[in-house]
Length: 204
Image (cartoon, rainbow, N blue to C red; front, side):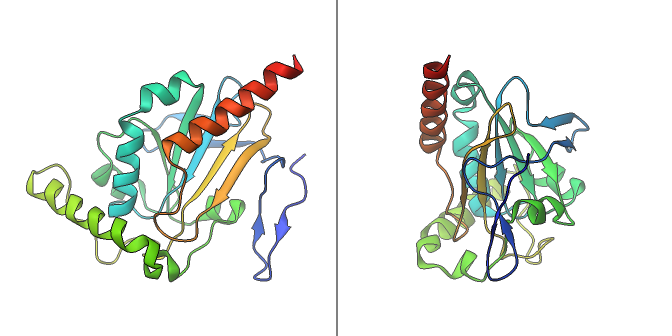
């Protein structure tokens, strides 16, 4: 069962730990079909912002550097952007993840992932935004990626979110970010997965 989700005053449905997600069949920007949940691995769904988002790029680079460690922990990374496939192919070359385009934000609605002015106005996001912009400029000068659009698909105010989903579709844990740089680190993800695996072993 999907279970009852929290309903906020805005009418948006939010998942919480212990609930079940509905079965999904998604297609990556490279045409690969993936199933949610994954019967063989934990699935970490990251809801990112727009293709080329400077903060998102920095964050995903930290995950790319430790992708082998994430895979060894039995975690399948699925990254979702509210941009078109064409935009993602332009900005995300080299990332070793399954990337999903959701320009209509249907998955965002299904998972209760929202947008807010505070995504970029929250003071805690300022430093990451500055570093992200500098990094994007350096990548552009090195010919690695084009500069991000000033008018990105889906807008600039998207908030991130993280979901770790078990092989049975149960949400092991989840987090809804409050600004553009408010998301799980690799360490946080690995810690949550380790605790879940320990709990699973105790029940066997």
